[in-house]
Length: 300
Image (cartoon, rainbow, N blue to C red; front, side, top):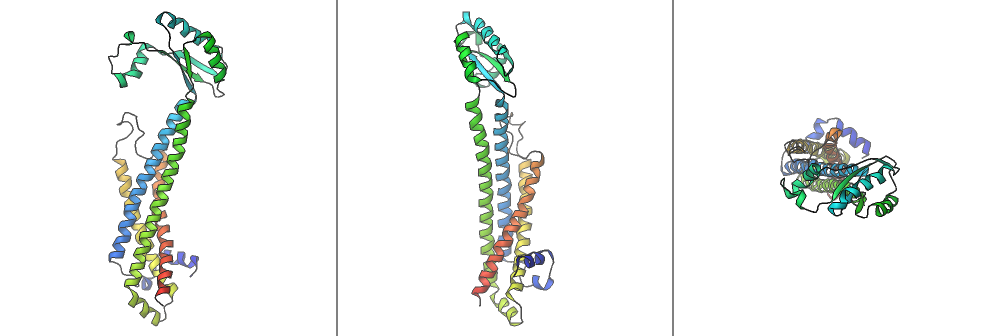
């Protein structure tokens, strides 16, 4: 049986061929339930992959063109070194802007960790300077050398050690999400194959009668392929819908204080789950086709 004939039979209903496969039974329930459960898990795997990658990308982009200079010096020298650093930054090519954070801003940065009543005046907290780069960036090594000469207490943090792991994490999380989808489709193919083989074995007598009246194996296999593919499509569609509804009721990024982006899809990302029923049906199509021919050869 050619693949083109299989696809044609899938989209065009044959009432007589549909009667070959029982409409109910354990194999039918197993196919629908397995497809629904796997599609539900696939939605969450896809949402987790996209949300985690989106979080890593957002943090990486936020750190991409910004740097921080930390000045640790005695109180008597702190202001002088701050002005020296700002002067150096004004003369550094690639620096778009630079400013020293106020005590209120530093208090806001530390309050999530130490509380709102942190006594900054009584603690040796370094002065922080925010540096915004131009798209071309600056020479970090050269800037460090100038800072060492002009302000010995200044330390440049160009965020590279933070940005690189986040970028790597984004690519790995997307890879793991894709691997999870492949494993889910593989499990779906295995369960559909077992269900199809069980259905063919349970209908051995019907198949023998069909052969006696002249039905070819391609005709019998086509009937099973169509029925199991449609069952997988129906179950996967229901599971995908349930997964999308479950994702919708999860806390959003705003409700989680923007620590997480929210386990959800964004923008056109909501269209990706619509591919899950199609992938499940395609997997069931080829799994059933393989199982049908293999089982029919064993019933000679």
